[in-house]
Length: 460
Image (cartoon, rainbow, N blue to C red; front, side):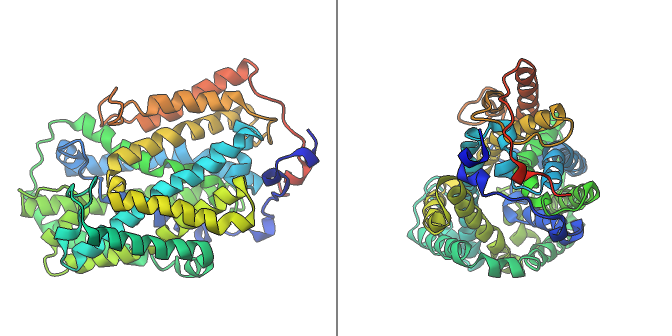
């Protein structure tokens, strides 16, 4: 297959030149850190839909250790190889993924699929923002939804979700460059809130008595939640690190942008919830947002509004990625705005109904979906001599089989399937299975030949 017969998304791609790259502390670290300063990440770490919650299953000290392990796994297993591929090639994920999934197969994995998952993330952000705003202004009775918190219908909740979602879908479609200019400062808000809430909760943590009856399930549950949240962002390390100069940037950007923020944000959230449980042992909800008014009665409501404001940048970037990904793979630049608004509309409906509030199930689905993608990419990377092989012709069945088998393993603890306990870390298993299946099938000759693409050659 010659260059002129390549799909348009491959034919038009060009590597990011080295002169446009920058040190890790100017791009990768803060871009990743902002992900973990989103309340949707740490709000569910202490408690899940499975009942007791990791904090009570494991205790505060054990939870902090589990976060350290989870951060290391996110950095080493889910980010490092995608990051190195992005740095080596200067290309985005939907181009680099054509080695693992093929020039035709790359349309769906990881191309369109990434855009579809961003619809889910946009719905999560919209749902949480609506809840926080209503609770922050003292209208808790309206912070309910049909399939989420409260299991009731609230026209006011729907209205707030629609207004929030439409506003930031439009910003993502038309004005993302303005958000990008201030995104560096948005993380300051949740950092201050996390530090303040942990400081107010600290005196009560000694009164928190955890039964620690299920330490192993609690440990695995925290890893599953962290990895499930991070899986798509790990694969997106290709995009983030295409702006890096060398492997030093990739490593330090990951350590200080992923591993440390996971422990920092998750740890402070755990301390806050432990303090709230120590102060009010009968607290019904084991979430960070529920703990805020307990540890900070005078500031809790205001802090919720500030957390909603702090989620503006993630909401805008999610909507931007929806349009950018889908228009690249399905249409052209002219279709980016309608695809952005169409995808965001689906996300708004999911948020308004409360479906997006079931985070444990959502995190599990994300981990199961992208764990095998990363696992297959790692196998392809190692088989190619620790470099990008280039686009492979048509559909790479080794990659698709690795994804399918890994996904089926990854959803075994999902509430819709129920094959394994909800606390089991199937997101990690899915990566391992994807790696092994790809490795075996590639050795058996199921990889298509590489297409010549001199215009995609790595920048020197």
